[in-house]
Image 1 (cartoon, rainbow, N blue to C red):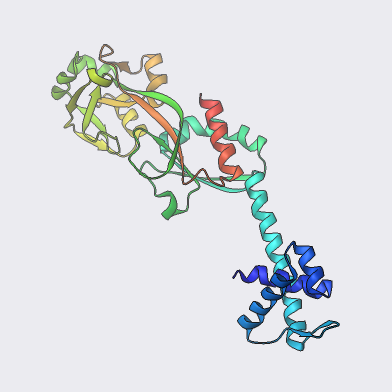
Image 2: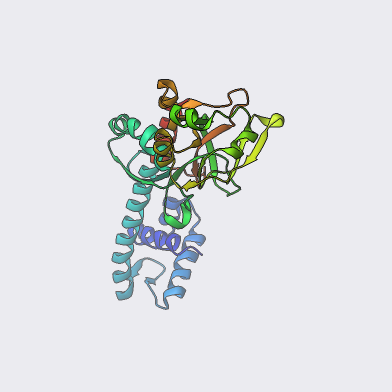
Length: 293
């Protein structure tokens, strides 16, 4: 039996001064109210109420226990209200993990508006290109870019980007311009360690895909570092458009093999469960979907 239910019944009996009135107050029968108090007494190993045919009275143990029950039930009620407000009202600290480049380029410019809308939420953002364990590391939410391995997490797609193969004009002038993926074997390819394909770059879409294995002089765990190296003429990179798009538009980097094209790149919000989703998580995910769609 739930001890809290027994405690609520005991308090109701004391305050109503009868099992009948307590039962009516709690919408249970007189017999059930008496049973719950009896279970509580058996659990505690002491009598809480003196019962006569005409009235009820508290024992010494009952008086002390009643005072504690009132406080405990008040604390439980307060805790339930606080937890309910966390679900209904966006507030508290929101711990979010996301890739470094995506966070600095795409999320940082969106933070001020979110904070204006939801001033009671504090954002605790961890930038890491590795895939964090939400449960083990205590994150409310993670943003992932790329393919999603089976994880049991809820995934909501926020946007779609694409992979771009590109290099600086100076590099292409010195080493030549590849016209098909197989030509990359003769070039300095700078690879991203955490790419979902590893050392394999895939061009095209669905059934018309071409994959090549890359064995370049540089591997790094950060896309911005590879971008800067490419701008300096170090080699060819295969990076999301959100990282290199401005450089491609300005001509600082040249997009290669556009006839083949790069694969689509999903951007997702991941969280442990849809059930009882807190307002701070829900509003942040909805806001990102709104701004990134």
